[in-house]
Amino acid sequence: MKINKIVLGSLQTNCYIVVDELSGLGAVIDPALYTTELIEAVKASGMTKLQYILLTHGHSDHILGVYDLKKAYPEAMVVIADEDEICLSSTQCSLAADIGLEQTPMHADKLVGDGDSFNFGTITVKVILTPGHTPGSVCYLFDNTMFSGDTLFCRTCGRTDLFRGNLTDMQSSIVKLGKLQGDYIVYPGHGISTTLDAERKTNRFMRKIEWSLL
Image (cartoon, rainbow, N blue to C red; front, side):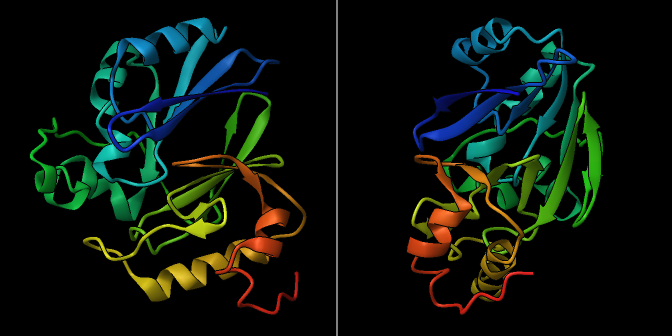
């Protein structure tokens, strides 16, 4: 699997272009904006087909490029958790209205929930619902790789003081991630990558828990 990160927008959102090299299929995770840089990265990735546009949650700084990317690649399936699909049509829920941004309403092609899985070429992608930042925040697991959106960051976690955020849910989600078996390379929605083992040892939110790994 090949992963390329580009940083988009004023909030420095990490957008990931992922290619399953065995099948040639590609996915774009969290296209914050539809830009020349994004299109060039997709074209340079070597993918033979863009299969998925995967959204870790519905905030505007992660979804404003979705409509135009879908228009350019109509065969790509837009995937988001059921609880956050409303963000694709509501500027209040996506927070676009809060910062005066326009958003073209649309619907997802595929809604996912906790424990769901789907095929991405030769890879099985697993979905973990991790509410807190938003009700429909998810992490996508690609083998030993985790795309954590705005749930888990290097040494911290996502904020919960925005509309539809919930601190209690976030605490439960961090516990849930910490109890996963094994280690993962973690690619967050902002900032640098990390590993789940490193977060278990150094993340102050995870260290509050005495882990009993399942």
